[in-house]
Image (cartoon, rainbow over all chains, first blue to last red; front, side, top):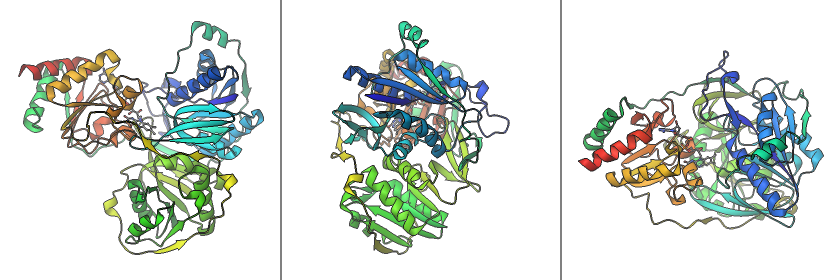
Length: 256
Length: 314
Ligand SMILES: Cc1cc2nc3c(=O)[nH]c(=O)nc-3n(C[C@H](O)[C@H](O)[C@H](O)COP(=O)(O)OP(=O)(O)OC[C@H]3O[C@@H](n4cnc5c(N)ncnc54)[C@H](O)[C@@H]3O)c2cc1C
């Protein structure tokens, strides 16, 4: 069982997000980056499948500038066997079709049985890469997986539907599955894992010119959302805050 | 502009986001064609004939009588080739997430998803966990877009009339590779979030499992029920039936009191109907404050125990 896990490095939820000078993206040098949270669940799922089957290989694949080596190392430290880094400099890539094409060109050489992705990234949230790659490679796809079960040449996936509904879907392998957060408990790397990661192979695929040309989609500016709602802001010393809340509950909302 | 709007057949009724997508389509173009697939299409067509549409296309093929990504994406490709729309529009539902990227790859047409509004130059989409908005545009002659819940109001649906046309899709059984079982619901809990007058809702800002009782104590003091955001449920800190949001319950209590919840759209869709929203968050820029009536900027771990005490005292 050969499994690819696509991992993206994204701004952490606690990071400051100052805009860049052209106001079309954030100023990346001021940002703290982390592994995209759903991708972390996808990686864990791949490691669990490999452990359950007591054989196989987990390969982490990441695209981006040299900073993404950090999440690649993290993936290796957690237990992935090797990694592929698709180098891509410059501003973040916006066009999902081009991104998926670049991944597909590399993935098809490897003949993976299973491709796992997080269902969307915390930065641009396009939520398409895994499905696009599936179509481009001619593989069946399923999204929002919250449980997986690999059988002989097949994978059963419990998909999350809306409003508390679920559905089991069975697909023949090879397949591309996108993973919803929360389906497992991602491990932390052990010290041994961290040491061992240094010896693991990272194949670097140099910058392509695929993304330097015209992209079919662009992000023209970013801005802080404004609100039209009238909001009372309550801040200050905790005792004063509590006093004001109690007053609101009693007199305005009338619930206590 | 010719628009093709892809509708979602929710076991014989039209998905709420599909109605909003029709509104978007009516605003975007003169000629709007709607596509509906699935075995109970007739029921949906019945609802649609009162709207101002060019026509409704139905596809009754056996291989798309129930939803599957392979079949649906192939039908949308064929219908697109036959009626050449400039824009393909859908609601950003879980089903759209599941198959629309396949359509994008089949046609080589870009897909801008999860749009919250239209602007003069393009489309507005939330980025970076809703902390910022981005304006997106495309140079492509054909485009796929999907709209987030409540981007448009179904009350704006333009009434009128439309014709109905059956489309003969050419599908091959070998092209439908997945086998889908019947959808089901997980066992419900004994807590009825729907009927609670007050909900105290816990988010990741509660920081650790040991702090969760702070929320239950406050709920007790207020006569409230406890609900939660998804990460709190995923961590196993509270039961799954307490989850509010797109994959949990939709609630509309008299007061929704959120403790350390950031306000991601998937959470907000489940609670924005609350009559009053009070939120405690230590980040003054948290998106939840955009929809809050009362924005308490501070530390839940400090404020909540004091508030419980003050309410118990009186
Ligand atoms: C397809 C899909 C479906 C989803 N379905 C759902 C769903 O049904 N329900 C749902 O909730 N989510 C859902 N999500 C996840 C959603 O996108 C968010 O990730 C989630 O709602 C975030 O939960 P949170 O606000 O508790 O955590 P976070 O986003 O991590 O926010 C924590 C907040 O707490 C604040 N904070 C931290 N410490 C403190 C403190 N001591 N005092 C005060 N404030 C503090 C922080 O400033 C932050 O704003 C879904 C996502 C996807 C992609």
